[in-house]
Image 1 (tube, rainbow, N blue to C red):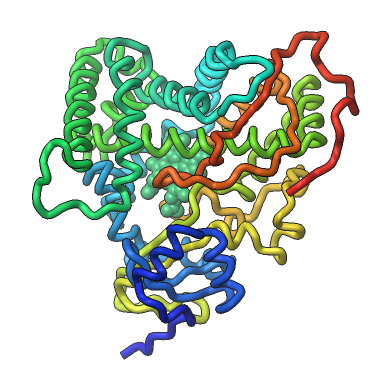
Image 2 (cartoon, helix red, strand yellow):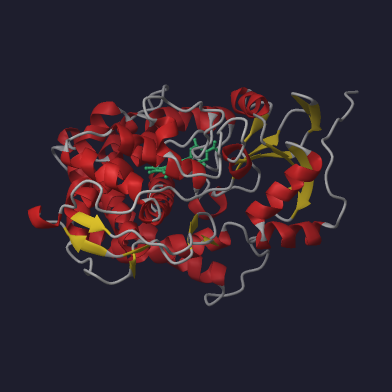
Amino acid sequence: MTTVMLPPGPSSSRTVQGVYALTVPRRGMRRLRERYGDAFTVNVPIFGRAVVISDPAEIRQLFMTSPDVADNLDRNLGRVLGPGSLFALAREDHHRVRKLLVPPFHGRRLAAYEKIIEEETVRELASWPQGRAFPTLPSMMRITLNVILRAVFGSEGAEFAALRELLPRLIKLGSRLAVVPVPKVDLGRWSPWGRFWAMRREYDAIVERLITRAERDTVLDEREDILALMLQSRYDDGSEMSRSEIADQLLTLLAAGHETTATTLAWAVERLRRHPAVLRALVEEVDAGGSALREATILEVQRTRPVIDLVGRQVKADSFQMGRWTLPKGYAVLVSITLIHDDESLFPNARTFDPTRFVGGRPDLYQWVPFGGGTRRCLGAAFAHREMHVVLRTILRDVTLIPTEDPGERWHSRGVANAPAKGGLAVVRRRTAATIPPSGATSAGARS
Ligand code: HEM
């Protein structure tokens, strides 16, 4: 018999801990770390008894461990994205499907998406008002939705327009329901789950039509969209992905790739307007055709404003020896992205927004973890980074973001992703040769 060894933690009831986790998630985590150290045991709704970790060595061990020992959480996004979704699949099934999905997200393909990203950003910027405050999040949501739709399905059409209208509603409700138990009885078409399943049927019908049309396409092998690639891909045993698997997987990409990227971009606007020296340096870099500071800025926005708080695994083996701890089967292990990104010993002046810390270097992937890690690390990480890079480049090139003295926006949970509470407010002026600010025109200084 292995002896269980759990980190210490609060003894209050699951409800009390749940309320705490929901109302003050980041402050609550920091308090627990102050009190119990960098690992603690909690008992919260949804995850049950769980160990929260923020030590890089333990995070590394968790991400590197075999899926037979620790794999996806039992309560995962598969409940809203479907049983074929990568989020729902475990072990060998996950590995098999993930292998098929990697090619569309690799180097040469990513370069092909750049044109789409820039076109969608330019189109959206044309509607930005000048000289008055407006939230950028809705714009970022439209850009990222259109980009992922075009990457997934290729050309536009009637179905594309229908999905553009349907998906934001479907994903918004799905994000909220992701943490709500599925009722044991059908509560009818007006209940949240009833409305969700009705939208899901609508989605399935549209995707079914797109698949049928793609299968009849005589030049399918010349297409570069993800649907075409999926239809032509084969598992190692030569079999194809089924239609329902494809529908679940496409919804997974559309949902996972849309709101996370948009909320990060809205945070980028929120941060940059409060750090005029960084903003000015970024504009100068764009004008000179450079990119190093922009790359670093994206990393620093994701470090200081990670849109997902936690990445989790569940112990599947009888026990899991992780660093100082021995966890029993069934326990959830949650990596606190907030806590590790906040760690002064890893990121000096951690609360300060300072992109220069990443200039010329790459972050350690067990310390900088906004995309999770290991065999389940975000499939779209490189895609998202490229997208944020191009969107920011286009914004900095085409409009002047006016700095602000306002305090930083608070966090607002949208269910899965955390967004700036005011939607990343911006005030902009369209850039022309005459409005490009001379170096030193705005006040310098970095606030956290
Ligand atoms: C800033 C943007 C994004 C953030 C912060 C983000 C974050 C994450 C995180 C934290 C996970 C869980 C990783 C783990 O468990 O270790 C994840 C998984 C995933 N993400 Fe992203 N993501 C982003 C953009 C995207 C994009 C653009 C796509 C697709 C185009 C995408 C597709 C996925 C998929 C398919 C998974 C499941 C991977 C698996 O289970 O194998 N994500 N993402």
